[in-house]
Length: 321
Image (cartoon, rainbow, N blue to C red; front, side, top):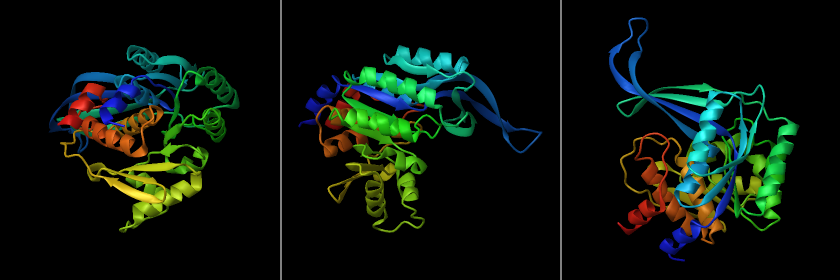
């Protein structure tokens, strides 16, 4: 399938995005002195932005490409929750699967940035696994929406939402309907993602998952084999920064060379890769076609500050250039 045609087909897909929702706060300013209280820079805050992160950023990537997204996850009853909900609605994703959990704060990450450089990140979170009752609510909402969705994306930030039971039953729900399941996993949680279609770890995560401490020439292939044997997934796409992407299917590791770009911010690049590949698979694309699109999309978003997305026209122009 031609990539332009695939991008057009991707715009008609609807994805269910289940995972950890994060309210990302960015404080931008300038630094021109060191604190007299401690040897640390003093940031003169000039502006702040809030963006929908985690699973919500995956959904934003889906809608930016012209697809539709339904978001499933948990939030607290606080400013971060209200901010994130408003942002998800603003970029056109469905919020019917977002559950408010009393006593559980909304995960929030605050990044302080000066001259395009991140100085500090402050995390506010509770990572305990969600309750069985909350699992039941999410599964019920997912079952109701699954018929209208062509793919399930599991967005794992290790914040307690993707419990083993929730992953297992959500995956079974979609695979029983012959629909693909894609996941951007954390190494510690890989056993929870059995029989998904596609896993998209980054290089460090893949090596860690396989227990490889000293990388050698065949390290990524060994890591990919280990991940597939552990999870029984169909394919593993390993993102490798400037080296591009490695795709492991049919016992073969293929490299998709990195796309030259000036990197400003890698925040959210993994979300983009998973979203683009998932949407391409849902539209009938091959793993190779999905990898090409995701490789270029990732190069584009790391050239922007903060959480960024890419549109279909931007991606098409990039491929044509």
